[in-house]
Image 1 (cartoon, rainbow, N blue to C red):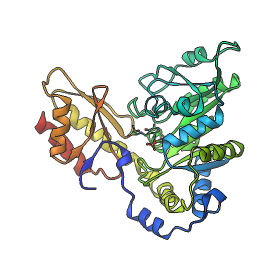
Image 2: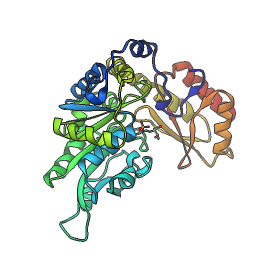
Image 3: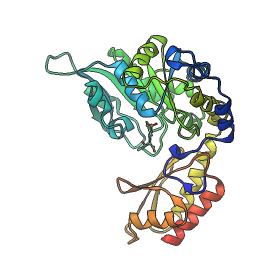
Amino acid sequence: MKAIDLRSDTVTHPTPAMREAMYRAEVGDDVYREDPTVNRLEQMAAQRLGKEAALFVVSGTMANLVALLTHCGRGDEVILGDRSHTYMFEQGGMAALGGITPWPIPNQPDGTLRPEDIAGAIRGDNVHFPRTRLLCLENTHNMCNGAPLTAEYTAQVASLIHGRGLRVHLDGARIFNAAAALGVDARELVREADSVMFCLSKGLCAPVGSLLCGDADFIAEARRARKIIGGGMRQAGILAAAGIVALEQMTGRVAEDHARAKRLAEGLAQIPGIAVTPPASNILYFQLTDETTKTQEEIVSGLAERGILLLGRLEGRFRAVTHYWIDDAGVEKTIQAMRAIM
Ligand code: TLP
């Protein structure tokens, strides 16, 4: 990759090992469950998260939608964070395509939802109300500083939800970042979730794909939901092969990205006019202070002229995301460029 592209970890290109594996992948028709490479990836994913089964889908958005369509029927309600990706950035797919109502409650700065807010949002049995069916959590939390949710928090909230006969879905798009940030196995973080999705196509560098994991009955139903929204794939082993490399080679290295995000934060914090929120994983947010007359647009275009890309439109904040293709030199160059522009 030529630019220093900090817009997202979704911009990552596949590694040479992934391209090689894709070239050599054995394939079959996955709608008939005959693609050996997809089958292997699904088994690996389930095993890595300690679940019975997994389903390969094209994107994180599709994984969340399939999960919601599987857990809920038309008219059901989902409790989720008001800053969650599913609520903010998935076009309201649950409502648009599934007839499911979202009930957003406040995300705390650390990405959690307060147990009392969750309890207060669970509907009683009343003919006027939709039926609460599901709680969605997000780990790490994209809009909340890339913060990881601990296993203890997830267990506490899941116990509240399960005690009311409801279920928990976890958007674990970056669950291996959460595991690295907390120094625990990803299984610990998802143990109490009834379903969990994670993405191969973010910090893990695969070109396409996410996995939805859960028990065997849930995944069998999810396979039907994937098909009805047109997500049944054929010789998808070409894509799954890169995903296998992602699980084998990339999950163990994401702590390096966290260290670079921290270094970038430290460097930017030295520059007058910039206020940095210390990053909790590979996602760094910062903003301009009253000390500067620079505008967001000037910063973004000034960086772009120097071959550095980042996002500058999220609620007046800048977002920089570190990943496999950002090295130490890229971090230092970004700090220097920012200093020059400011
Ligand atoms: N996030 C993308 C954008 O959509 C904002 C990014 O650049 O961060 N859950 C979480 C927590 C995510 O961050 C994302 C993507 C998704 C789901 C959706 O994944 P995709 O893009 O594969 O549909």
